[in-house]
Image 1 (tube, rainbow, N blue to C red):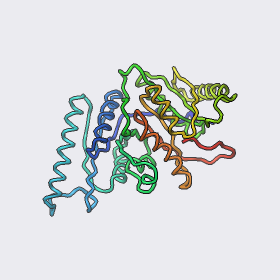
Image 2: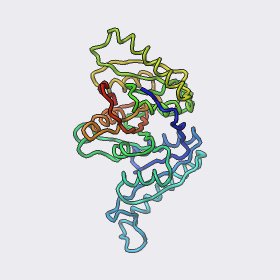
Image 3: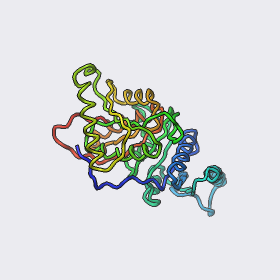
Image 4: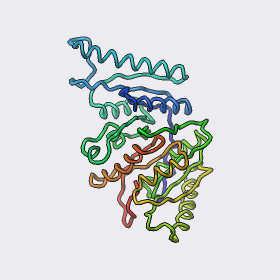
Length: 309
């Protein structure tokens, strides 16, 4: 378990909000607005006009119905722009056409986006595995972190919130430990403690590992911080127990009034990708706060314990 000291410090100067003007997107807008104000970032608001032609209708040959939909979308974007300006946040809007996940990923590259904010009322279980969602598709493929505001997220990412921690669940595998940089960055911005969390099977509760694992985690965290110059004080290394990892993480976040959960999600083969993303998806839809995910290429290594995330 190592973290490369060549990785740059995360920068969040350009933030993208993808909005479909739903209630979920409105919650994501409030989160994006708060994060931009906190970090001094510029906000781009994107709405994807999913017309059959794959592009926003122009003035030639456009039907009256499409005209109306296009005008309504622009009115929504103008309203959001007014709110951002009142809040003192620099903002621009983009109205584009095509498939939402594809357009979002194109905009990330085009605008050199550092962070994407999405809202979701995602489905659970089998329906999600079959049909997927825009948030899930972007989470898998985005080159930058994705901050998702789930349907139960009530705790905001704010600097004036005296209580609350940044939760970083990990199994200390190299592929997910790179995400600790993003947790550290938000800890600094919100003056929050970092809770580095490891989930063990409930059968191990009360065993010698309940004393040994926190010591190992603390030493590993200190080593990573020293190698990379990461400021993560104050920090807590904790273990929790549960037969379902996502439930254990969410319950810990509730108990500690988490402002944010940060996940390193492995991008592995299709056989294991659904399992990794499924845990992240469950955490997003059940968490009491926004969840930041960073998808990282998985590099197979021998003799590794089963993955956490």
